[in-house]
Image (cartoon, rainbow over all chains, first blue to last red; front, side):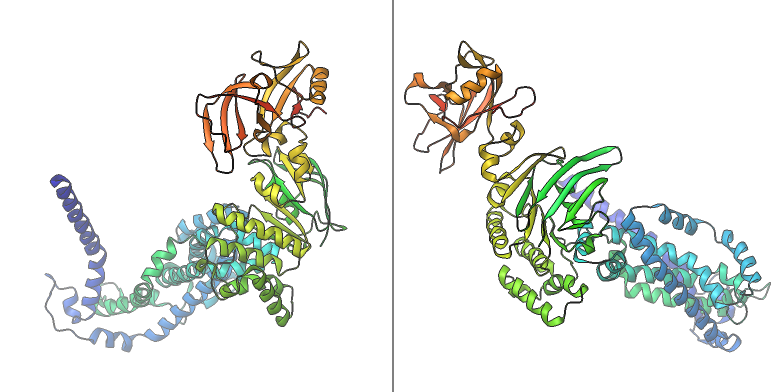
Length: 275
Length: 357
């Protein structure tokens, strides 16, 4: 009995230790970034690092003064919302079709595409978009980011659709529904939380994606994350402004994730619709 | 309302034939029950009628129309599923009105029909609830309500009572039967429960391995089974079967020398066949007052059911059951003399199981 209590205490202690370690590992760079954004520029790279400092908004002021930050943010928003919408538009019917027909190779293909390095797509796209004069357009960026969003939507929604009892679809068929109508009237309302989760994940991944915007955008359509890269120069990196930019860029995904964290976890494990 | 005609229907999954060359005519307004063990093809046949499974070959007619390639949505039939398959996100009212709405029925008529069906099924208080807020029995009623508002050509039921407890099952069974008499619509009901089949059907289709073993009224299927499979499947407890042969001008149970007293007609058939399988239902044994008049058995187990008592015994290497009057209170080890009621025994061909008439 005593041994069992001791073992339990050890397990609890080790669990806590694991959580703390994981938390430190994940959160340390983020905390560092946020703190640095409020430090005077010269202190950001000081060694040893200063832990006590007078917080300042100089880096944020500098950022908005020297860069068209808001227009980059707008570009990011256009590309992210556009590619998320595109991902949902094609991903929802695709996931439903895969679930309905039980033919899984299209889903595996999209997953393979997602797992492939972005550079694999970049070169052909660059050539294709250049040939049609679309380099630097929102359309090119939105289309390219759909490679990020589409697989996310499909793979988050597939287990949700699979979790709906087949007989519910069959009842709808007998009631007089076409397959398309079954999707919109029966299946989609039942996977609404899955759709929301897939949309948020697609938004976050698209917002954070760097490579396509770096190559396929121009000065007018540059997204935040690609613009932030410009702060890193040879020998003259503006670390303070860079930290401020990184903090602002990370803010929307963090806020979104925090707002819907419970929903996110349940949405990712969702799959059962219990009558 | 319509008849259903199945002609030379075959259903295959790859190389596996589930239903080989089946013919069946269901008359308009008829209540037909498909019954058979698991895997006999009864649900597949129902799903074919519904349009949820394609036909490999043959023809299916609903009314005068050949519906082989017609989608389920266009067949104008209603179906009640085993798990009810209600739309979880819709209120009971919307579950019931959905099919009518799809057909463009005017709102006032939808409302009238839903309320009429709800009144018939006693589910009016639940119209604003979601399915998850209902009990199993209430969900079952909603599933039926969803079917009857449609006024379809035929109702199909796929084991709709199997998820209910025993008491509720009996109640809903009676309600469905009453409903069928009120609605006067063609109904096809699938079950593995022979009591459901016996109590509800105008005619029963007994299926085994996708083939119809017998298609007749419950009384006929019970009293004049077409073969040993039907005889063993219909009736509870099941019919007892004893290998029997005609020897020395008497019916003798094989694997022993016990003589069985048979009526002259049955004895005549056995004499002609030489040997056969004798079928006696548990309820068709009577306790012989004169020991020399019956078959002596040792009581192995007694199951008092209240209304009657089941006696288990071994006879000629066969475990058998007799249903006797509850006033007779035998004990394990008692010796009894049983004899079959005249005219209530069945003889089956020992080789192919077909009834010998």
